[in-house]
Length: 215
Image 1 (cartoon, rainbow, N blue to C red):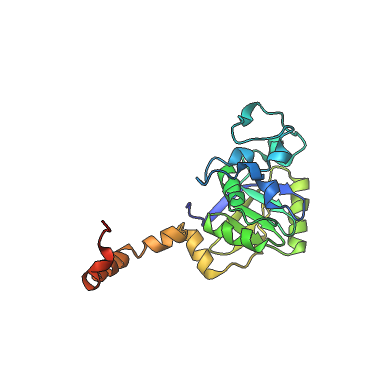
Image 2 (image 1 turned 135 degrees about the vertical axis):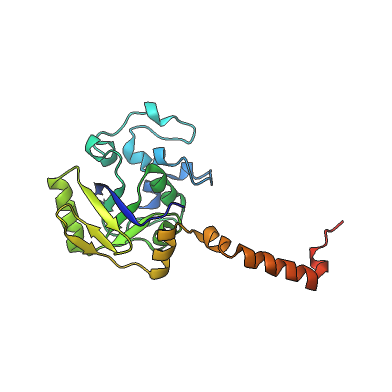
């Protein structure tokens, strides 16, 4: 998992509330569990004018030019700005994988669905909750300045605007530590690999019959 400390990038506005996980990555793309390769199908039914499928090459598909991610000024955006209850619907982790594989490092919204919020931290995506006033300020900023870069300082817990104004956000200290170090659940466990091996070795001595192969 890629560590997150200080990220500066283009912000793309998605002015919809209740964006569900089926909109983020439609159900037909859920066959793979590799965590990668989902970026081209992020918001598939909104980005393209035809029906997508896992075996379809996205390069030659007709695009919806009105959708934000198809507009040239938002190409290569790293930060997604959304409205309340982002990531609602089914609990598919693929929704976060698709956002990360596309290139997003953070999503800013007034609120998130709980399961999506938890999945985001476990996969290197920072979900930032700001109040409605700050969210409206950011949407206004993207209208006035379509190619707008923000800086997200995770250690300081700040979203820094081009003017230098900083918007503070709350984040759990443990999640902040894991994200800043690039540690998912497996990475956390592997920090104790020596202790795990020592425990297993001791158990083999104490209860050798548990480690015998069944013939």
